[in-house]
Each structure stands twice: as structure tokens, then as C-alpha cells.
Length: 448
Image 1 (cartoon, helix red, strand yellow):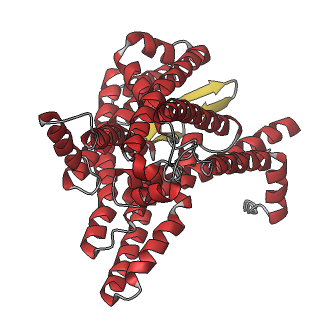
Image 2 (cartoon, helix red, strand yellow):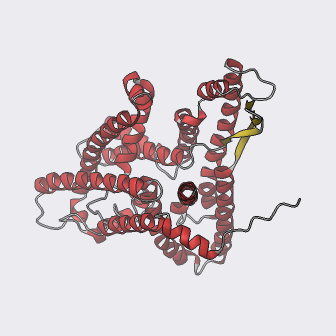
Image 3 (tube, helix red, strand yellow):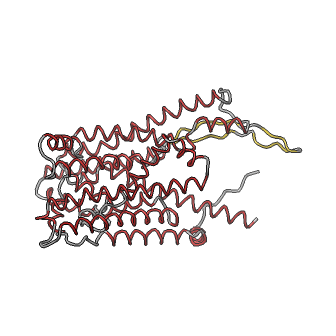
């Protein structure tokens, strides 16, 4: 007997699913939160000469690099100039401490939702500490260039105290927006803020590029090559994001009355890049912290002699345009990919092996229990190594391509930005699909 063909859902079915699932409300809420964030990036601190500071932020230095991830908030010296950076740095530190400190690990793994809330509270408190420190460094940088960055007759002491308070409050407000978007919207709030920040800077980079290639045929050819490399990089990012190793699982047969259940082979998919875009975001956050401190401290007036020379020497090695920075960046991506894979629940070989043994399932040719855990550990180590090296190489290709083609104005839209944008977009689409499927499944159960 021929089975009837399953018809794909019509446009009307998709519309009704979209309306009934609550997805529209989540999308509208996410979009509204992004409008609030973009509005705040245009509110400057009191006493700032924005035009002069934009000339500093527009250059190929650490300020311009930071401005890309803040969506122009830093270049405008807005009330949320620190952006989501302090919150991401705090999250990284707390995840590292959860591995080292047994009490935090117990909170994270054994105390369920209450433990995760405590971890979140610690993360928020540490975000405030980091925001105070980063705002202090940034305000000292502004006052050091007071002739160009500050308006005349501004009291420096009041400016420092007031600006540190406002910037810290702005960082906390951005953290609140990110958590609210994650809870009530679609996608990860912190990643979405970075995504829209980078997206908002695209016209700026294209305008700068158009100015330098208009009258240079050689640079025009280089621009075509660079854009093709960017396109190929995006394809590789999608492949890396979606690639997975499928481990076949043999399930036992169970007889209930006269019926036999189970016995079908399934598989466990292990993603080649389990951390998605997070290792890139973490690596950038880890590198930006010492880079900012070194550059500001090296150019400050209160450091003199050998100590200032040391700061200037170290700041050159942490400059985003140097080879040493790219090497450190590559190694950080590899290490953080392994770290992120080690804390993901569905990437734990012992737990997977115990669950398989508990339900009587097994991997063909491998004994249950410890041998299964060891085999999974070998497989996951190789998969993660390939994924980490691939992610690190992809992250460096556009940067080197920009130097070869001599078009550095698009370096802000290089590998880091491309990986973040493509990765966040794919995660966003996957969450939309998951939300629609879960809601349609719930409605199916209710109908029955």
C-alpha cells in the first residue's frame, strides 16, 4: 500500500502558526529593546566634544576597534559607552571560577534553578566592579586629552566622578536589557546587542572604503578580491556552525504485552563547533581588557620612566593590527572553544555514558560504562580540536586578506565581525524554528 505524501505547510498555515505561537510578540519585544539600546547610544556624556573625539575613535587604534563592538556608543561617548563588555567579561570570569571553586560548581550543577540564580546574581555584582574600573580608565583617557575631548570650563573632578557613575549605570542598564531580551525575546540578548552594534557600523565602513577606492583601479580590484574572500568566509562559518559528527546508538527492544517497543538505531549529534559564536566573543572580551588598560596607561602622564616604556612596549604587542595580537587571538579562540565545550551539559562523556548504560543503550562495538566514556572522550576531543583550529583559522583569514589587498578600512568587518554576525543570525533562526516547533507540538497535544 502506497503511503500518502505529506504536504508541506501552506502560507496560511505558517501565518496562523506565527500568530498563535507568540513569536510575533517576542520579535516585537526584541526589536523594541534594540531601539532603546540604539537610542541610548546617541545620548552623550555632559561636557564632551564629540566631533574631536570621533576623529580619535575613527582611527585604526584600540578606540576605533572598541567602537565597532559598542555600535558607535563609544565614539559618541554616550551614557552606555562601555556597552555589553563588562557583563560579558564578568560572565567569563564566573564560568572560569565555577570550574576552579567547588562551591560555585555545586551551585551551578546540583542546586538547579536556585543555584543558577545565585550565580547570575554574583555575575551582576562583578559586572558593576568591572564597569567601575573600565569607566575609570576611560574617563582618565578623556581627561588626559582634555584640550580636544572636553568642552572649555568643565570641572575635571566633577566630570570624573559624574562620568564614572553614569558609565557604570549605563553598563548595568545594558546588562538589564540583554537579560530582558534573553528572557522575553528571541535569541541571546548579549549576542544580539553586539550583532546590532556591528550591523550599525556597516555604512560607516563602506563610506570610508568608497573614498579610498574611487580613483584607484588597483584598489578596486583588491576590493573585489576582499569581498569574495569575505563571502567565502561566511560560507565556511555556516559550514562550521552546522557541521556535526553523528554517533550511532543501538537501543534495546522492550516487550509490553504483545507489542515490542524500541530496537531502532538512533544517533547523538556532536557539533563541530559546540560553542558557536561564544568563543569568539569571549576571546575579544578577554583581549580588549588588557589592550585598553595598556594603551591608556602607556599614554598617561602619571607613569614615567621604565614603567611607561614597558606599558608602551606591551601595548604594541596587543594592538589589533599586529601579528602578535593575531597569534594570541588564535590561541585564545582554541583554548576557549575547548573550555566552552567542557562546560556544555551535552558534551560530558561520563554523563552520556552513564545515561546510555542506564537505559540499556550502547555504541556498536564498545562496551557500556567506562569504555563508552573513554571512547566518547576521544571522539569529542578530536571533534573539538578540529572545530577550534578551524574557527581560529577562519578568524584570521579576512584580517590577512585585508593587509594583502591594502584595504584596511573594512578591517572592522573582518573575521571577528563576520563570525559574530553569521553565528548570531544562525542561532536566532534556530531559536525561531525551535520556538515554532515546540508551540506547534504543544497545540497538537492539546488537540488530542
